[in-house]
Image (cartoon, rainbow, N blue to C red; front, top):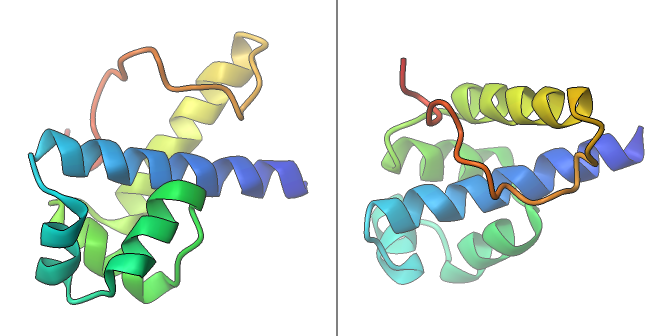
Length: 102
């Protein structure tokens, strides 16, 4: 069970980084706009380690929500599991939709 939670946090940080980069924002810019320490955003993107308040604030500034992000992660984990891939694998394949989109 621990590996599932580890994979979820890894994917959350990875997806937040991708959304930030898609929006052409630096870590410093997003951290400033979200009102969180730069080190907190860096740690989140690298390891998925984040408080709920940082998760909520950062995802809000990226135009999505924690629930949409977690739903997206669940879809990606299920997709990988049905293909027999490790949930800790990379996100090389383009998703069918981004978090928060319909």
